Image (tube, rainbow, N blue to C red):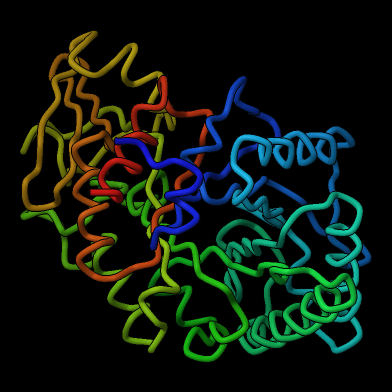
Length: 357
């Protein structure tokens, strides 16, 4: 049975869809969602958040109109994303943090959105080619503290029944090395844990880019969603504040060593990140690609022996198991990147049904 608006409002789990402004779905069933994170606002050279694309404010309003179908739906504006610069400068000083927070309040006033999702990839790291500083971690905490204060003040001034929401997207390992996760979470309503992109163009081998657990032959340095969640819990972040992220897209590698049907093997080149829609329509048990299941990792993958191509991805089976994991560990729900990648609601339905069982 699919979750209705009323059931979601009363239920314990969040179902959060990222919606990309450059790939707006033709139709959205708001009854299956508790929240939408609209991507992305950016930071200008004066440290203020806003939309570079003039059509994005209208897109946010179109998402807010979905409340006609689900009055409990909340729409947040996600700020940043991979390769988005400006965070380190915006977080640097007391005055820059106040300016950043003020621009966020103004953005919410102007659009009518329900909150902000901060997606800094990543504090203290330049892997995405962005400016970074050793003090980013401490400054990030202070940035979130000021944002929380200003959003709460604005919520009170407007007499809002529910305060403006503030969330972040988080990762594992190095993200923790350069942040104060044990301190900053108190300023947040929840944390969207990016449980994907563990294997990609930056890794030396293929692997499950969104595996729940480690594959039997994965290197000790391999990443997985369970290890990431455990790192968050070890920082004394309440389980209910953790939302497990899943991927509605895959990662494809070419010129792969054929041992172990391409899993955890060296590859020649990274190809692309096909959507689940593309995978289901063109590749899963098609075009020479055979589906395999890794029961250790609880993850599917595709192998094409003729072309030596490997694809890591998520499907309904792996997502159902992740939903069971969320329930077992008392997490706050599930989010996914991103809605237009689904095919006829297959993966979203898997989330909603499994979380409502």
